[in-house]
Image 1 (tube, rainbow, N blue to C red):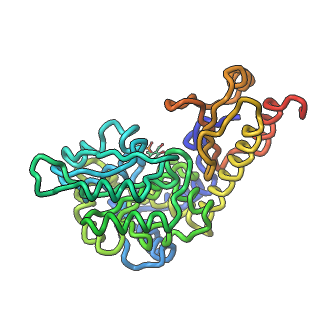
Image 2: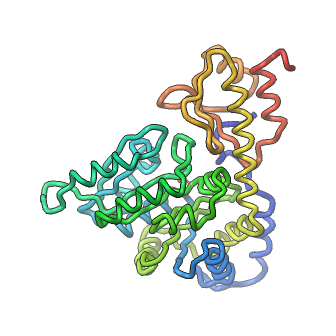
Image 3: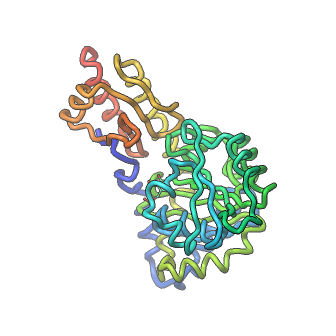
Length: 344
Ligand SMILES: Cc1ncc(COP(=O)(O)O)c(C=O)c1O
């Protein structure tokens, strides 16, 4: 009953098999290898565009910080939600990698930035006022940090506002697969077709060992040389990059990543349905992906914990339960049998 995080899950066996295959013999270094070329070709098909460049990195923090740094000068800012991972959980990496760029925080229910909030922020900015730190970029997260989704039309509306004010748009897609599995949208619809210029496409939580793709779309591909230079300077240009690309190829092959994300979502939905019916329990956000945020009576949290269930108390209150590709039915069933002893 490990619901601590999707990063606690092992890597999918197909990822390990792909690594063994990629290990057959020598290959050019620093991204000039056939695995990385195959990954780029695969992504162009998946995202339905030739106007795409990709750079794989081993962590979501590196993907976000490098992506933001390519768009946000040191004297500018990134607009993001107050609960964004880049604000809460990256130890200043965005500020460090941008060389001093600032995060400007916006509020909104369930981890989403409402279009009116963004519009008001943009209307109030005055880049000619030297004392202000003008935003260069809007950063959204999908799934959000509250486990909810932005629809393609919500992202389009926010992107339109951002672009109209001269801002670029970044999407932190650490759980991009979970958002897509929920919405049934295509990767293109939830990214560049909705105005996203740069995507941190996470695969680690989906089943990789450690692989996140920084993807530039459309005109943003002109920044690829800068992205590579920044990756090199930051130590994110491993010589044997093929082993990162091989992980992504394994998960993207045949849509495995979406299948795995769908499984994680389905298990979270079952968990949430069980918890929602419990006296004294209350879901803190709609469950739209693989994460459940819930307020529980302390006695129930203790009982679950004593029975071996793993989960975290959450800073905003309540507890977070996360399902992954590897969450078995038996774990959910055991959990629910503790919540409802009569059904044991
Ligand atoms: C929304 C989001 N973005 C980025 C990250 C960063 O990933 P990493 O821990 O690999 O740096 C996480 C990790 O939990 C995340 O939840």
